[in-house]
Length: 249
Image (tube, rainbow, N blue to C red):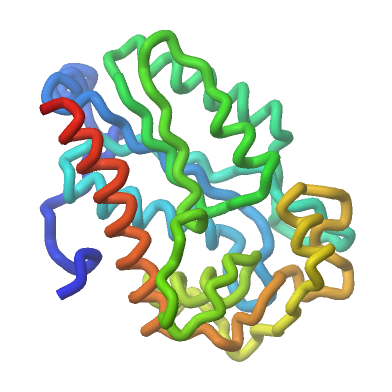
């Protein structure tokens, strides 16, 4: 049975606990998981909260497995600039996201958190910069872009984590197949220059002629999604959560 389907207990969502209960949890384990998503288009086949849904599932599974508190989800990030308008999409500026997280991290650190684990499924440079340059007094901050985890070869996919493409679509098919309108998916495989603009967050990062996504969602499947999810989960569990536990021993 894969790790993602094994029952580890229940997640520990911060918002449902009293201050004294949080104090008790942090006394046993001073780590806090912060899922950071986006609200942006990922093509006509995926919901605006695609990134958010993926990191929330990972955050819940890791929280349950390692008995680590999970912060409320930050549902907005730094979206890729588009030439077309997509109703419902909403973005923060890099400085805004950075200040928001700095304020939250500072408050949580004062309350006893010693290690922050930020999970995000959006690899655009301005978004990553906002999350990876936070300041604390003593606490450590680990920002994990789940698509930066090297994926195994021979998984049946292209292995290219691009916007609303095969990997995003496969992961969401696995997490909740009802959310994916695969019959509306449109492939738009970008040239290298377009992919570079996307990652840098340059103007027109998502071309107007695209369906709002970059990649080949037609190649997606539930099986690929489960394989990729399990691999990402295992890598993060081993290299972030177990590694920090071993460092204390």
